[in-house]
Length: 282
Image 1: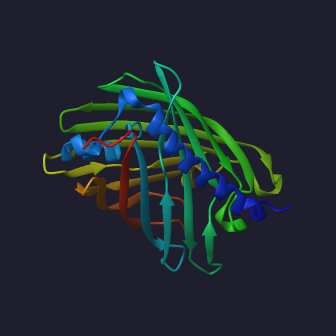
Image 2 (image 1 turned 180 degrees about the vertical axis):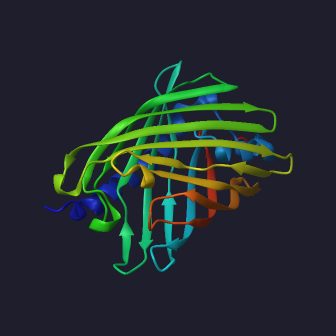
């Protein structure tokens, strides 16, 4: 059976886990309840950016890439990357973060569909505050809906993150290494390093600015085409509608280093929903 045929089942399982874990979190975190109503807008802005926030986060990021291919075409993608925290014991938590991309790749052989599904898990101290770290595995599954949109390989590797939060400042660095171990050997190996540094400054009003490039190095490519390095900024605003905490942000990034034929510059917009990990306090 082709892997694409299993995609609806995979998505159903992921959605079911998220819905079930949301209800489980509300029952399993009474000692660490995070209440959106009690958070300042500045705190909510930092929670939007924090990969280890004590919220259930559901971000939707829409990216438009320009200058793709020899005819400078336009591509687009929608990324959904929910985050859920689970209590392991009094000292440790587990954070799960699946990442799903719906992508349009422009001609001459245009494609529209799903890319490979990624899922990261982090073991992190439950009581850390100013400095927070997490380590764990990352997995990539060949669930792409077409050959051009995926690798055709099963891949895995380590991932780690370090977060600093003090006053209006938030800084983090997240990295992972993916290497293929199974799948269609005719598609070539996956050997990729991903590094995502992040620095942001948030105001009392909930407005924030951030620098958040995602840099990659493809170890299987020629040196001239190995690096993807964006340079740019994002501006966003955290706010509440009733008891629902959320944020909106927009940004633009240029790619001074990128593989031949890939995106030369891009614009992105993101909407993030924050759900408390315990019962709301009135």
